[in-house]
Image (cartoon, rainbow, N blue to C red; front, side, top):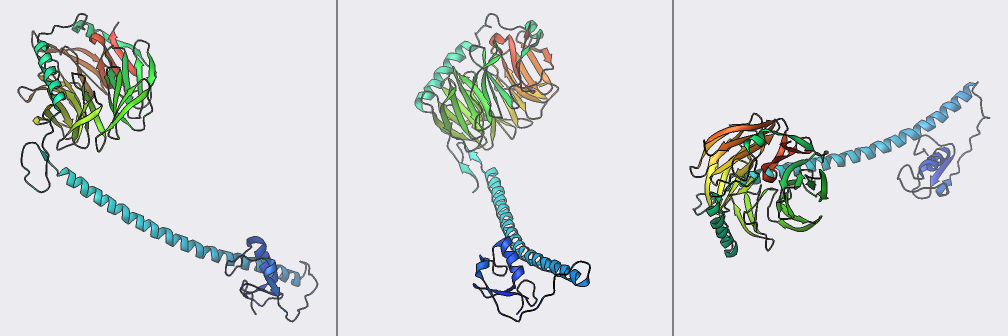
Length: 476
């Protein structure tokens, strides 16, 4: 008989009732006291499960001391027993670790294969999507293209567009400059009037309500707050939202925001009035029709959506051939401009949805702004240090205004006299004189911003600065 642990003939042999394995009594009792298991099978085992085996009794000498060779041999024997137990345990653990490692490597290899397949399918889908073209009023010429007829607005909204255009186009050119409006001299005196505390790391959007006091401040960190310019404090907090906010504007006293989940949300009195979800990807920009009854949103899914604000429903979705990143309605409301990530400025007929014209810019469009003269459109492209001004009648760029640093946002004032631009290098205002037909630069300020809006009567400029604050430039 040999001990299943040490492999030697046991002096006090015992056997397991469960499987018949033979052990040295002192070794198995020590193992059971520590692990409560059978060292061979791993089954539960207790001292009561051991049966002593009868064998020739070996007379052991009296306990030696360490001063003799027999005592040293006894110590060596005890150390050997301990080493045998430890070696056996390590072998078991090594075998178990090998099995776990083999399983983990198999799972890792399977995961890598799945990820590689998903990436391949994603790339194939992106490639197929990039080849999709959407024609308006034409026939497709290959199997990869789609044909979508332009969607016309419902009769009620189409009539609203016609009525708004007729009313505004008749009065726009005859409209005089409002009393108290800013002049070149007053803009030349613009300086930093006051700045808010840091509102967070993400504010990059600003919209001013009709009163000229409440500023809607939004950001990619999901923050949405209403900031009082007069009180220099936050009066309403709608955040944080569950997704990055990509644009925001006022609809009367209600705030409308777009987010990276493809949603458009209408907020009022500290709560959410409704959520509209029409885009398949992120919603990138919003635009409010001059009538105040129609809203448009653009997105990375290559479409723009028209909403009827009276019913709070989407009524049309028009697709283009590229992702859209900026949006603006014409002052008369009959055409809609969308800036694409490929550097195209697409002009659509609002009622029919037809793509009326396309202008090619230097890079992805970041900002659009129509002049109130009805014929000029200012644009800013990603990475560009200049602002382009397009003449809709000539369908061409008529002027490029060098700002000196990358432009983030552009805005015409209500009269069409002043064009403001801001970016990492500061804020610039260009003035156009209708009498002399000359441009001048009344303001170049070092305050850098992500977005800007004209204040009441253009007597101030409100910036969302790069340091996360709201800053007001005006004459003192």
